[in-house]
Image (cartoon, rainbow, N blue to C red):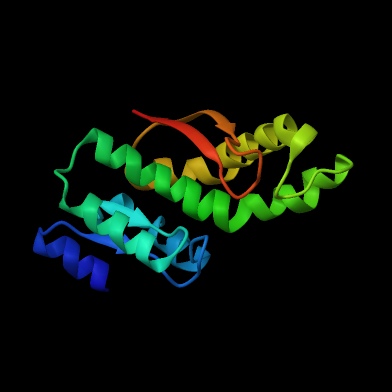
Length: 160
């Protein structure tokens, strides 16, 4: 209701999803993405600490809307909701055990398999609701792990 009211006011609106650290509130985001244009929110964040999330969402909400801002918001949904709140745990349970010595803190030889699985899950499960909600074509070019651990993913996304 608060998001609907904010959208109706015409003022820029952002959503700082701070219920959990290091990942989104799945129910909140899934309900939000069921609404076309996600009530017109300009910014979303649900990652790391409350301070990081609030600072990032506030800053993005103050920026002028446009294609780059929209792409950043969609990337946050993919990282914070899809990857941090879901895929990261699945990789630890389903992919890492196939590689002796691989751990969430050091994925080692499992890096390519983790990237492939994460990309497939993003494309199959999480991109379609985002495309419906935002009316944009979303392409995941690649997923990487710049620090060799599951906690940080680099999701290369293109929004058209």
